[in-house]
Length: 116
Length: 119
Image 1: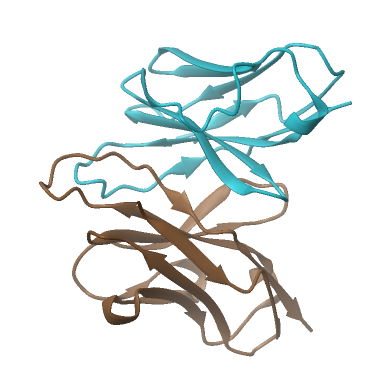
Image 2 (image 1 turned 90 degrees about the horizontal axis):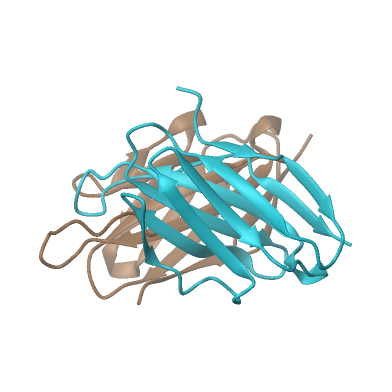
């Protein structure tokens, strides 16, 4: 299994531009999570999906952020327009549903976003 | 709501010395507890987890952790540090639903502890 695949690994963009981050979860995993990691705030859960349906997006910072999961093998996190304070490492993770919350999350290698 | 506190954002040990990374949690229901490790420019990797059963849990790379309900702690230890252990370590918690139904894997992470191993 190739694990969780994120693209791109690095993204540098100008303020005001649209940024799209992509994630391919592990096949068969029912849960997909988007996290943001910064020095100031650590790891923050932005949104998570169960069977392609968004369950909790309370961590999405602003309306500039949106996430979709059109099918079980693909998700996107979009920022439009981007701002310098969005600079961070964005992680995608997936997890199987074994019931009772007794599961672990498998993380991708992250996308390092720099907004200048 | 659950929360996790890691005591010490930076820990430095000598190679061969004991590693102790502290984690305390707050939860009103039985938690599931995890330790993840993050190497530079990498994603997080699971070290070990506690769900039910034996409270002393062994993980990869010689790490282990003990769930102590009375102390609401889940400290991570390794008897002898190796240079390759230098990384950031995250404690995380997710909750068992009271009714036993599926609750998903919504992890809450601690702030992380950066481990430095000196030669």
